[in-house]
Image 1 (tube, helix red, strand yellow):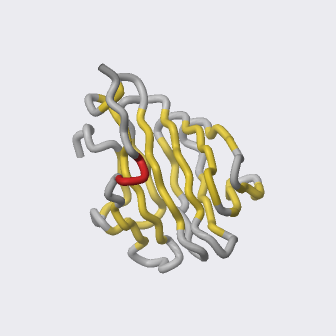
Image 2 (cartoon, helix red, strand yellow):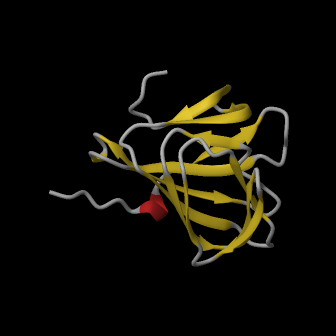
Image 3 (tube, one colour):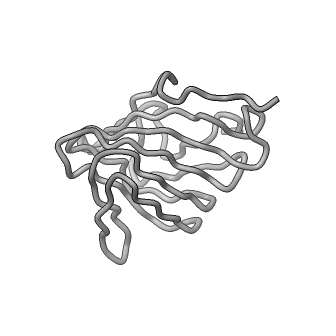
Length: 140
């Protein structure tokens, strides 16, 4: 049986940067290995106006779908405008950030090509007071 996740009712965790107050977002794992998926992971997240994810790399390919809001995808080679309906894929280990540049909350879904993965942020993220975040099914 395929479990259906009501993403709009998932409890989000508020994540923020230890040193940069603009790093401010809420997210939840909708699926990952052993929790509704066997070969992929999905995060639903939102960034309030003026907030950002924070510079980081992901250990696996990531595809993003922006549901609502406007922002900028920042990468080492420049920035790109994103908004509702934007879809883009990021290769593994490419440093990036997303900033909400609009007046409404940016809502998005991130799909990862692995059942278990990590994200390494430039700064310490609270919670859990570490540079490394990732799927709940990983060690460490």
